Image (cartoon, rainbow, N blue to C red; front, side, top):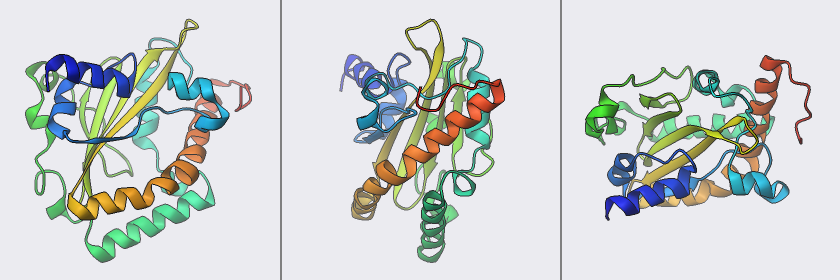
Amino acid sequence: MRPDDLRERGRYLAGPVPLNPCLVRTLLPAKPISRYLSGETPRSCPTARRRGYAPTPGGPDDFPRLVEEIGSGDPSQGASRAVRTLFAIRWKLGALLGWDSPGDGLGSRVPTLRDRLPADLCDRPSGPDFDALPFTSLYLLDDEWAAEIANRTMHGVMHIGWVPDGTGGYRGQMAVLVKPNGLLGTAYMAAIAPFRHLIVYPPMIRAMGRKWRARVGDPTPEHA
């Protein structure tokens, strides 16, 4: 695949802040499981689906706050009861079946992508530690952040960008690339897809919007 193709694929996934081609190249053939982060479900919010903006309006200097909120978040302790239950089931299954053992993680089953980043990204900070989620930061720029995760089922990258929203402000935008690990990973990702899109993502994103607005004292209703 040519560099131009990689850049174009990055734009398709992440919008105005493209995925670094190195991330796409090292995870190919990877499956994009999420192209946007919006405050509404795609069907009920076609504009959010098209533009891919998170419910995190702000100015050009607010990206560090978004990074902090994502890094410190714990969806297994918030959002809805259904989300908490699904996370509890996932962690229990992982413990019973050994999906999350150190031998199946970064630096063991798969090498970390940080070792393959271009020099200009390696020289930048890797980013914050996560309080609860099993991600490891790869790099952090002024308007871009990437973190990776690996277990027995897959190797994935979460990419967060801080992009103009077309109205003079900025919002967060997320893309996720996942490379399943063999038949187990492919079957697992297919099995959980309905739960992710119908049960997990909508309340998590709404909770993010509520938390964001509460910190800035914005009384704007959630559906606005």
